[in-house]
Length: 207
Image (tube, rainbow, N blue to C red; front, side, top):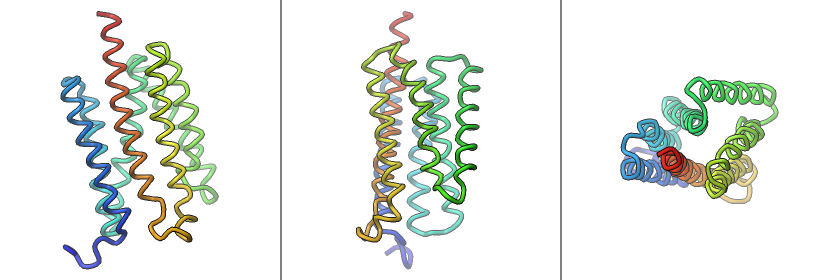
């Protein structure tokens, strides 16, 4: 052990290496496929940063580390929603879409506060707004729309594992939180690849 008591949560700590790996892989993929997509560089960096923050949080269980986990994690979601919407809308339109998503998320979490975990409250909002974006993606390519469905499905699987973790710990010593890490980072990586494909398809269409 490098630090006494580290890691505080074995599986939940080391599974963050998967998140970091997906973040680094996403950075490399953006560089190879669209080196001037600066928004996707930022999104990929946030994925890796979330892995680092979560690694520190689950390894040390210090309050400052929790901020390093949750802040970039929340920014990953908001940035991804904005960039996906920006594929189809103007700067103002994508901003308005993001504002509606943020407002709906805040409302649902407020309504569920005290009775539902935030990730459960977010599920219907994610499904509704994802359906709108998948429908827009279908106009570019049905195949890309299917990829969008896979991205969202991975995120929902991750939310499911996060939701049942508290109950699973009674029967499975390591719980299911580490699977939340793996599936959510897989969703983020596939989502970045999706945005690259949409960008490429639209460029070919208007070339």
